[in-house]
Length: 350
Image 1: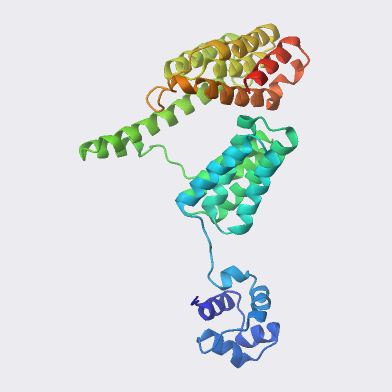
Image 2: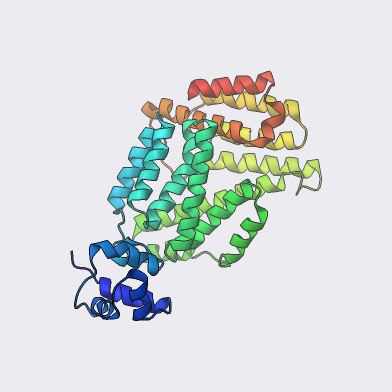
């Protein structure tokens, strides 16, 4: 394979402010030898690649201009493989992810996608606490890499997700520092993209753009309502109750699973000291999951075929059970019979 190792050595040497003589002394060769490398008159011996990389504060892959990445098809195949493995072998999944990173250490897209996978999969697949904690560490490392090494579109998205992760772990100053780096964009271009595609007569792209805008807007509205229902933001319990009612109405109109909504609301009711109401709501949500019809997420997701109802409920049950186990709002009721019964029902579903 033909490489441009000479020009790479020259560029890195100059960036570090080194002379050819200084590099030659660092790796144990003559200055004319370095000159020949940089002018492509000769190539360094293989045994010298590691010393040269150390002297230039880089790695051999960079020295050889070798930056392996997965194709989009390969990445999708890997994620599919990981999801299938995650349902039966958490430790094996973690090792497979680490192996992928070892094989493609400079692939920012891989690190970002694996980080997203590691953040969601433990809940979806009902992993135990040690594996879930390891997955969270893996996700954090991947997001840091993507935020630093990704392209212009990836970096702010990775920073946004990482800031959310830091908020959840209580690292508020670090989260704020990341949020401060994000560009302030009061207007989203999504609506204009939708109009653009409509005017071009591309209905499929216009529909996908509008669906993306609706999904993002719905998520923002629901998250804001949950925040307004918290004791920290609501001025009175009556204000919180109104926020709860609006949240339920919006989530129902959009077709979100009612069991998922009720478990979120139960956690917030516990914050207001409504223990019995919260636990009764939680137990009712667990039962309703086994009985209710699979929802159709309005406009941006297709209805689940009837033959897939069972798998849908199992997946949702695993996710909700994982949420219950991870949410600190339930710490004070973990020995209550209603909480334990809800866990058992969702475990049966999983």
